[in-house]
Length: 190
Image (cartoon, rainbow, N blue to C red; front, side, top):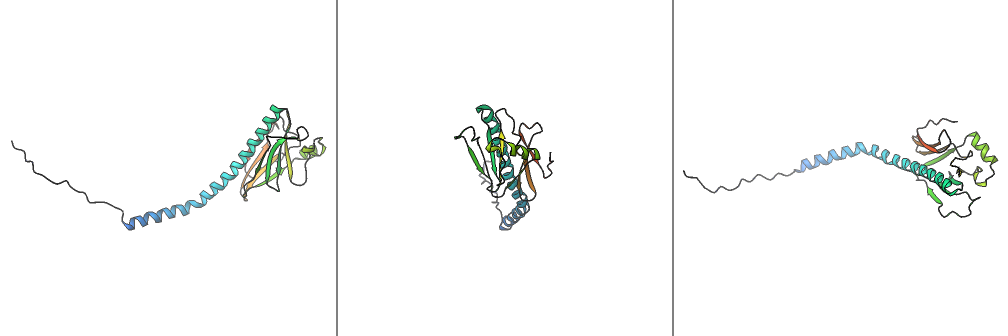
């Protein structure tokens, strides 16, 4: 038996590449997909700004309540609606200097509004503490007492909005021990 051992060169496959027309077609398809999804993406990123600001505010309320209980000093979470700033510090009638005081500024696209119930307005006017009285200049205070309760003069609702359609609110819980996030425009008044 004989085996034929002749040399045969390896087969070369022709090189495949994209043609210019195929590349242009892919680019056009990508442009169409981006044009269709751009409005949805921009709304998504804008709503992320609103969501993160509300979550930061909620974290600050929890931090204020925790500090009030652990340090035995009332904590004041203040909101300056006209300046669009808010922060946390110990009540100045108890502590003159607070090294742990914090201050935040709202994103340019966000607005904040505070709603007080009639009970909160009356309690704020009758309060013995200077920091608890409601000012008419757009300065509002959420006061957390050392016993863990939210002061009666604290606002019921703080509304964060972005544009005319996006809105989240931070509302006192039913037991008035803390605040919670609520979505939507319809906020029931107590």
